[in-house]
Length: 221
Image (cartoon, rainbow, N blue to C red; front, side):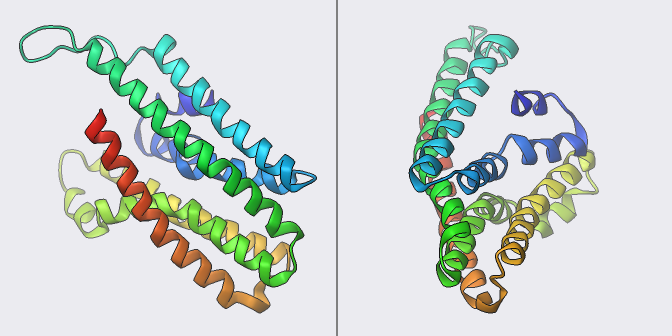
């Protein structure tokens, strides 16, 4: 519900709200914390997966029934574009369900492992988890590098650009803050090379996966 409401908020605050409650980072962090709070690995995997799948279905159901932002458009020939809008909703729902089914078990298990494994294993799990959380943000940065945003700030859409830049920054900094928190709570700093290397490598790989997923969704939608 919060993810749905965030879409209606404008300006910088809207961009930040989307990052917090309606993005891969927000939903992934929820799955990670669900796994960390679980009592065992099976419940961690199940709980995180159910959370993401349910959130996806509720979000797109609200778009389909309540906001109906897929409807009301017109094609160049004047005919209704509703069919294409529905197709886009179906494609995005399917894409996010695929992400949920894959990321839910992974993040749930990583959350559990970061709490229960010995220090090296916990550090590896925490680094991989935070790399996954940061990957969408890094993919966004590669798609719209900061130096291009600086040029766009002087345009008429400067307010939008500032909000977009703030959201991108949050998508990169929040996962690092989560890493610092996990490392502090579980005393993982003595193996900091494992933490940082795992996060960097996973973030790079995850950014590529986000790029491929969005390219595929755009092709289908």
